[in-house]
Length: 242
Image (cartoon, rainbow, N blue to C red; front, side, top):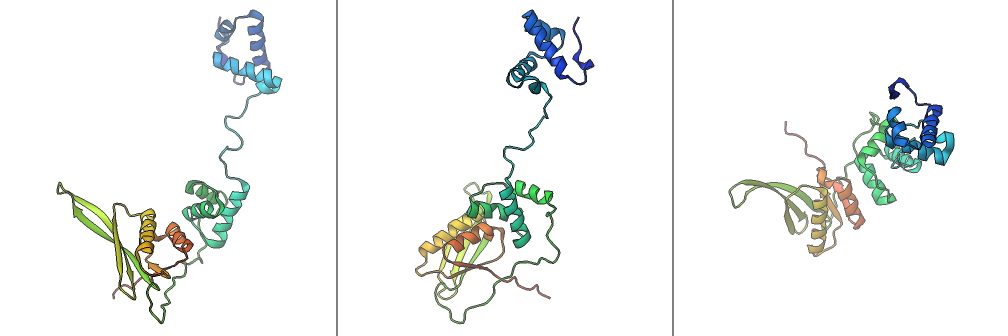
């Protein structure tokens, strides 16, 4: 008669040892597993754990590890908290900063969970927007101010269907020299590619690039421009008409 293991809410170490000893004494693992209603995979897992650790191997373990193998280290967590408290960076900006300047690859979701765990989900109310640099140069020389903007285009393909494209344009304030390029997507990656194109094509050194606060001109774009020895500033938004 088979024994229903459901009657044993906790498979104690003694019970597991009994099953292992019965199987060894009878020399018939299949019969013992069938009578005690124990899956053979479970039996062999017990047997292997008992051979390695003795009674300790038969103690029921937690279903998950105490620490996830991809858990952020204490050092990385400290950097995340520092960037949040001191510079008020968001999860994505923290992710990009860690990868660029500390060679630490993580995800914005991991950073966000860390901020929640340390009660830093929301920024203080007295934190304002970053300062906008609007000071203009007294003398205009080529390359001192390059205005970069994006125009949305609606075109038609060969089949007559409407398609959307994005025209990136750069204009030098002094000479009015212009460069433009059209992309299928509106991303920071394409904005960076366009700036590389502008640097290569313009016949003078670029000192400052001015953009609006569009998502394509955020952290990755900003750092790329600065890494090329070029200043990047945001244009002050126009006041709404009365």
